[in-house]
Image 1 (tube, rainbow, N blue to C red):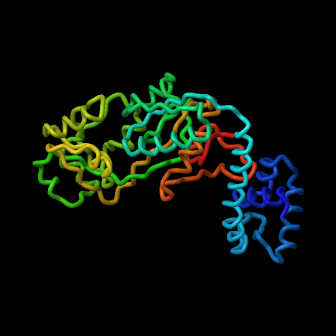
Image 2 (cartoon, helix red, strand yellow; image 1 turned 45 degrees about the vertical axis):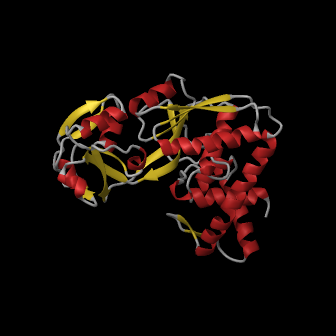
Length: 321
């Protein structure tokens, strides 16, 4: 297969629309159609089902896409790595993170970056809640691993590195602390201790105002940082929402972490400033995304052969090209 055939097939397999595929590849729709027909003649049967209303992959087409895409992406990375080998990268990349398990992965990513480019270094900064986004926007860090969602239009949310189960953090002496799990409806039992200064969207995503059944959740006191939130919970002022993983890193005798059944996981994604990708930062993003646990990796709809990725991509598996 020729490269243009692979790119055309993968782009159409993603778009499932001839005109959008042609626009993305900067060719005519007729060229896309001709290329696909030639490829179908080569394999001996249809790869797409076409009607006046829709385009869909056939079972053979889906299998070909699944087989081709990883190899094609490896080829692109290999070419990029070869080109980067002739580039002297000597950046210092400052990286912020809101969870200690993110720090562990970033250290590994920094070691890999320094091995490839000895003059490129990574410096880490532990930040939480609203301070994390502020540090990124104020250019105190170049890259951030934090919890979406983000309202700021100048912050790009990239690939998700981790996806952790939610937990309700309660005072150690409370009856809920003896439960193996709780439900989202149990958020009404105690006032909810929340973080101050975060965006409205983030606040509702992590600290909901109502349960799935519509019951109001009482608001408790607020704190500007993670340790302050935990101190309020430990003092019996209420409960808060965190992750089960946090219970392994922030062990205190006055609190307990109880897994929440039926709750969506909390995600931790790479974030960077829009239009501000130095060479070392770009490479570090690619390395960190590659080191993420496979189950947590997410890809966006804008990824693919010749794709023009959106400026603010919520599920992109790499930086804007």
